[in-house]
Length: 313
Image (tube, rainbow, N blue to C red):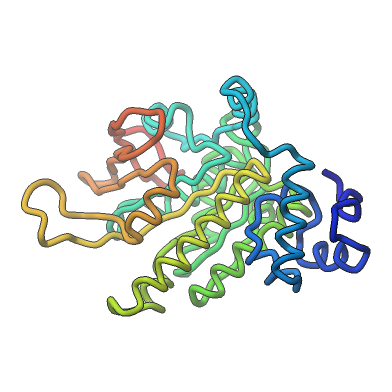
């Protein structure tokens, strides 16, 4: 999967290989997981050439069927990041895992950003302490990344605040197109640095602002779908954890139960392996409910938000 193999693919000469590398696609896996339309756009290639290259890359990597045992072996490379609360970690069977998208959604003040910042700190802990000993990419869409808060959490975790901040690569997204571009460019940072976590806080704010009204709903969902697939591709290709926070809305037509639902509908729901609903409780307590996961039961955990970060209640 070295970049020298690119020239060996059918349809990839020296110039085409250079285009792919300039666009950030310098491994077979990064090409094999692209769609022909996307590769054609980013690398300035014809659609037929792009499709031919992708098929050749997939064939070279043998991305066909595999046994369940092979899949289990592949999952052994998956790692988890602690949330600093044993209750919360138990709910997620050890923490937030790599190779997947985890969504935290809830109302204002429910601790969505606090969870994201805590994970950005804990990702840098040694593996034996619940971290990955790796850096973080943080896409900030609402100006919620507060360095002073990260310093508090770093001190609470026993880490050097300055080193922790130096290992978080932050970008402010000013609209949905900029947000999509930052996610696509994140792979450049991942390749140059040892990154274990990608955070998008929040996922849908810019999309809600840019696409207003039912007439633009279809276009919004289409772009959101593409954005989620980009994040999932990064998670799979680089064995990183992806965490997104999400806003909520109230469904007045729901007569029973909690009318709160996450923005983004089925697009976000299907793309997120873990969906966690956060809500306020008394004083500094918060309740996390695991709403959906492919292999874990629904359940709840109570935790606190303190000066040092997340803690057990």
